[in-house]
Image: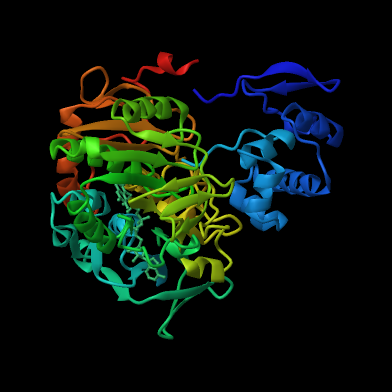
Length: 109
Length: 414
Ligand SMILES: Cc1cc2nc3c(=O)[nH]c(=O)nc-3n(C[C@H](O)[C@H](O)[C@H](O)COP(=O)(O)OP(=O)(O)OC[C@H]3O[C@@H](n4cnc5c(N)ncnc54)[C@H](O)[C@@H]3O)c2cc1C
């Protein structure tokens, strides 16, 4: 079933709750430093563009209670999808949520 | 006299108009529905048209004929909703006022949103089957398709009936095999998801089914454009999938007037409370069916289960009482898998599609998440139920809240 099971782990000196795939289960445990550490885990060094995207994703989550889709990030943060793929290669929506300390995007039904 | 205005007379709007007409006092409420035309298409039948099992005309009936006496039917293109003035403007200049407004204008395919998709190859080697016109054109294209690369593609989620493209792939595979052409055709399923379907267990089972049928899955593919010269899908991360015949589900979007009215999200879906369907920030605007942003499948079955909850809540709301019914996101879908078999999946906001029997636990007769002939016959007879039981809003013997009885939840816990 989908009830999230979380375990604690230590990332960059922070002790946080994560799900089986390593997504934070409590977005309030996030801070910018942890963001840097999470990004490192997936081989990304954050620059200003990454940070804009992360800030948007977190603000959007606070407002709507859901990790944003790629389309939403692109329109909301005003960053072309192509650029999002360059910033977060492979699976941008998931990587953005991961680094922003948000739940794994639910993958629309 | 108060006015209940329902926008859209498709699956959800029709069921709701018929149910509420019976439930509301005739002296107190007028019920009005608006739609742009009088052709109600039975959309689950579109795939049958594609495979030549039904003629396009057999899917279409008069909209107004499905709507109960006592409901006013207005034919017109909806242009804008002015929620402050409680008025709906039609494109021809007419306007309609309301006390309560229900948006049931569904979702539709937009190939023009993907560069190259509706260009020179459109309806030649690039096809869709979400419209009657598209289903007919694809049927003809499949007739002439004897060898090469068949690519089945989903542009972006959400789409209505998210299993329809899978169903198409499985049925096409089976059809090609029967015609002795299977070895001459390579089939690829290209999806923006990380697997065959959205929910993990169903995704694994359906993924396995594709594998068994020799259909290759290209996951996490976010399409940027169709390269018309190379006849290929190109993703944002520069993968390219060449095709001889592309069958795509274009971007699905809610009605444009919702954006103009400030009622839609980034895909023109109306943000609602997922338990009650009341539009966020309003107490006289609702959205039901594919038009809303509820996080479950966009499907006729969901529209049906939603109406069951909507009606008693609406009656409480207009009487000034607290709404006491809550929708759980219940969806069930049949998946035709070819060879006269079908699968049935059943899930809601919180519970994964699980294997088991439906609707009677342990007995069935329908099998959840497994191919069976009984499922196929149920899907076939569904058309009759649609026109004669669902649309008129007659009671059917299926519980609207999803039942966990008869399902094997143990398989779900990893
Ligand atoms: C190929 C395919 C297969 C499917 N198979 C299944 C299945 O097996 N099982 C299942 O449960 N569901 C299935 N579905 C999904 C199902 O058909 C839809 O979920 C259902 O019809 C949704 O109902 P609705 O009332 O929200 O939208 P619709 O039935 O699409 O109705 C919307 C109405 O709004 C009207 N409208 C929109 N904009 C305007 C405007 N501006 N002015 C005036 N009128 C407007 C339209 O004309 C339309 O009549 C399938 C869909 C497709 C495409």
